[in-house]
Image 1: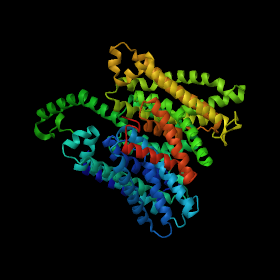
Image 2: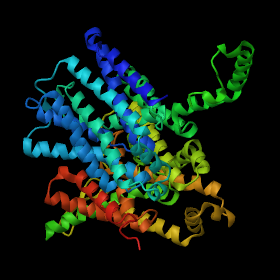
Image 3: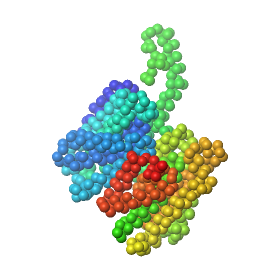
Image 4: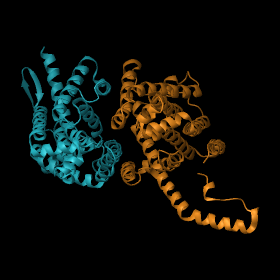
Length: 335
Length: 289
């Protein structure tokens, strides 16, 4: 799919979804919100981690930082500014941490990011207790539902468009090159350190902004809610199931999984997580590229088995009828 | 001076507990490159198993230790067969094994932890065992803590000796250096690989059984211990049994003195700063030559 088509599709989708707050009941609206939130989180996660093969579980840390920016600014900062600031502070934090730990590969990086959420959570808890003398915060003047929805919709659409633009850019190619062979990427002239830090910060921006935008949905905020590690796990899982190296895979699976979560997690909280765990194991063992891999395999099989035959027939028909039918050949496909 | 001694001794005892917790993961990650992030979950299973035997059958937890070890060893073999054999065989490099085993570990973590929630519920459980304090040089320590400390030192030294001096230990170390080379000189890696993995799980279970004598247990108790274990084996250097013990002591001391000077709620921050600091300055471990 070409870049322009995709961006056009995202814009149309956003326009279709925009009037939802005035059409849907509250329950469905919050369902749609959580779909959009996970769409934004997973697509921005896959933008960095899918292409560079760095496994970051720090999404909940960035999300929580954004949420706390809203909480601290509540009453003084206007909503859009809080969202922007939440994203910016999360990105700055990611750049700081990233420049220190991004030279570590593999499990160490994953473990550090695994702990990052806990670390920030403990730091915030300590800070609040020691200086603000409080455990949680109440968000006083939350914006209307429609404003929250439009903001989250905008952020999700922006994340998808950014990811699409990055994929084809020089920067995105450098990220992908780091994923396949970092040493070689360096030899070819990519400043891998800067590229990695910038990519990490860019994906953290969206996580932070989404955290800041969603924070107003809770009226009471405390560290365990917003730094919930489940947010980070779910993001990784959704992206992996969809296929982290693609753009549309994570997007599709985020919609499916946030619906599943909303319906199953409240009713069978533990059994649902057991199911997620088993699913993850099966996926890593038998389908490491996610559902996108299944789709690619299926398309390749389709092409190999049927397309050549169909093209042959079509071209014979075309020869018989003259040039009235459009030209069609196995090579002119969309890939 | 007496107070300092008490803080130091408390730190060393906690450090010994950390060393026990880290030992199993050290075998799995340090020697085999299997990043088993669900390590703490098997610790939790061991703890629940012991608690259950103690409350239902009144079995002495210390007598029950070998049973925990054997049951979890078998469980480890089964888990290896189901989850890790495929990736250990098919993977092209150690890095791929690491990345995939990490994800599988996350899956196991979700599964085991939430199964425990389903079976036992979220309540805290515990029993009292050897809880009377003893007085040594003016400072008071719980008997059970001293027991765990003694076990940590003994087990680490035993593991160190086994890896260094026995033929079995040599085979394990050979397998770590070069799986193919080990096969060429007649080491049955098809048996040894699962066995070492199972031993790691068994050690996690034993650590959990020991911890259940001291602390209250919940299904969510494993996660922090996984992180602690990772910090300890990073401090000590991957795969080194002696380094694991020293790393545990060091972390225990840093935490004890850090909490003494600052505040108890900063414990996690302290351990993470140690972890990140070591990874940045000496990624091969403090005692690497």
